Image 1 (cartoon, rainbow, N blue to C red):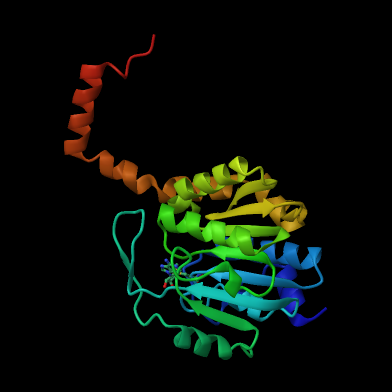
Image 2 (cartoon, rainbow, N blue to C red; image 1 turned 90 degrees about the horizontal axis):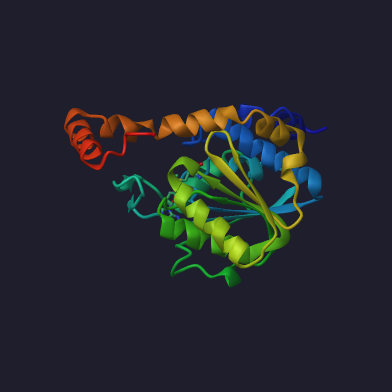
Length: 260
Ligand SMILES: C[S@@+](CC[C@H](N)C(=O)[O-])C[C@H]1O[C@@H](n2cnc3c(N)ncnc32)[C@H](O)[C@@H]1O
């Protein structure tokens, strides 16, 4: 067993140590668990991600000999809109900077980078190989996530997985993606994993049977609590005095707090 195989079989966070990411440790281990499952299902796989920033979420695939190709699609705007209501700013965000950081880990020839977004600029025909694992972590708006998802579906192999980050932010978009699968009678299985990773298996691609994923599914309190607490900010906000007084008045007028 190679050093990388030993590390991934125990979901070792050392795999992520070279480039910093905004992923939590549980996110990282879930992503490693999915990668572990994919590499056990197939002799080789291709990985595509939308939203790479510094390359933090690429590093496990760059190190993986079973990963033949990595596609990184990133629009790299200075500021990106977000369903949380404020734009998020990414400084010094360039493909050159990402490749420089990744090249300190391993040769980067298997990485193909495309600057742009899937709504207007990047076309599925630009992806030359079928993809088995996609990760969506670009613009966190409902419109962008649905567009990224449809793009991933088009380039995905008959059986493959599409993962989303920040499910506590992108939950409405994810609901739309699931509706899209139902409307189009596409066979899938979908699960929320800790902390905020959402996994859709398309066709027959049973990541959930792999022990690290199964373990997370059986102990699903971890992701549940993280995601509820992540959004607790909104409850705290709406419980501030002026909003509370307004809500009390409205409940009194409408009588919506009475059970019989
Ligand atoms: C949260 S960061 C990605 C972090 C990375 N996946 C990691 O774990 O280290 C989001 C990235 O999405 C990119 N982005 C913003 N809007 C985009 C869009 N519409 N399409 C593609 N990428 C976008 C940004 O440039 C930024 O690099």
